Structures are given as C-alpha cells and as structure tokens.
Length: 279
Image 1 (cartoon, rainbow, N blue to C red):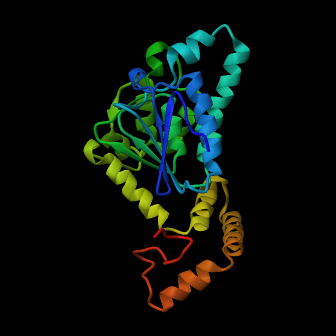
Image 2 (image 1 turned 90 degrees about the vertical axis):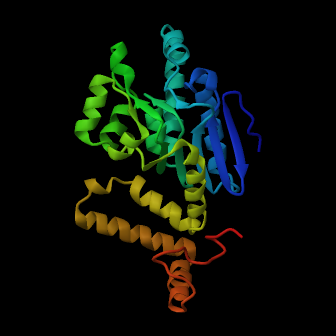
Image 3 (image 1 turned 135 degrees about the horizontal axis):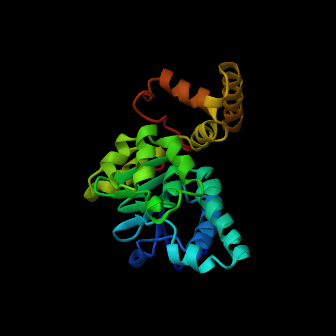
C-alpha cells in the first residue's frame, strides 16, 4: 500500500498506525493538499488489516492551527467551484470517514489546536492532550463563526457555558482546561504524551476487534439520547445479537466460558483470545 504524501506522514508499527500532520513550518494548518491527502490516507487505512488502532497527531510543536487561512480561504475566495470541492473533502475526512472509522482512533494533541482542528479531535474516539497544548476558537477575532462542524462538536462535547465563552471571546485554554470542560479525554505532561497514547492503543489492541467496532457503532451510528428507552433497548438488543452472530458466539463461549473456568477476570482484563490479543 502506497502511503507517501507531501503534507502528512504515515507510520505503521505492530498494528498501530500514526498519521501526523506534517507542515510544522505552518503550524500544521490544513491546506487543500493536506485535506486531499488525509482523505486518501484514511480511506486506504480503513480497509488496512495491519491497522488495528489509529493515532492522529501533528509533527513539531503543533497539532494543527486549523484551516490554512491563506490557501483554504483567501486564495479560493474567487473560485466557488474549487472551494466547494475542497470543502466537501475537508468535511468528508474530518467527520464522515474519521468519525465512523472502523478501528479505534486516538487524537494525540501535542501542541496548538485551533478552529477546524477541533472537528478532527472530536471525531476521534479518544483524545489525549498535552497539558501544555494550546486550544483556541479564534474565528471571532477575524469576524467569523466557528464554521463547518466546529460549533456543532463544541456544543456536543464542551460544557455549554464554557463553550460559549470560548466561542465569543476567542480566549485560549490549555490541555488541562480542555480535559476539565470535556473537549478531550485526558491531559498528561507533554513529555509523557506519546507514551500514554501508545499505552491506551495497546490496551485497545487487546480487546476483541468485532466488539470494539460494535461498541463504536452503538455510540456513533445513532444518537442514543434521542431515543426513548424502549427504542434504545431494541436498538441495543439488535446490535448485541448482530455482534454475537459476527463473532459466532465468541463472547459467550470464550468471554463467559473462560471466566467460568477462571482463566481471566473480565473486570480488570480482556478475555484471552486470538482475535483480541497480539502475541
């Protein structure tokens, strides 16, 4: 599989694939070329058997400064067809492909994270930020709104009062604050960031692959909060039956069976199985 690009870097090792924005001199701002390359890479990696967990990060001192204001906005202002085409690609990879990626995804926010980069962070299943990372919604400072899906994901993840404050003021906040208000899962010191991300990735690798995908589908294919309790019950029951069929009964035969045989403790570890673990 050919995965050589100009603006992103892809590394695969032991089932963990790292995709890094690779425009450090531009704070990894997302240009039209970067959007096209991310679309291509994620499309290929979604079907890549060697990719069990996907990490998304940035090279250098930034995660991503958001959309490249010059290349994405200003240079395309008089080219509506080209701008519409790249807007589609930008939206497709940051939400449609990444949000529904069939393997677990982890955003590893190493530094500056602004504007449109919020959508990519939100689309990942887990987000781990450096405590020193700087977040910001600076659109208000040049007379705009957090567009695309940024306002939507901010409203979804962040505490409402805090979300509106940062949208209206454009104030920056660090990784610790991002964890406090729900934008990221956790924050750790910058020096420990990648080690923590790999630790979580390996923990995910030990789980049953089909069960991981089913858990993602349960949370992401349907807004459970929008269903009444009876509808949610039937949806979850159907998904559970579907998983049992796909596994050929593995969670019952292996999961419960091996627990009853005292081979493992499901409260603290993954069931031992060829599907769920790597040697």
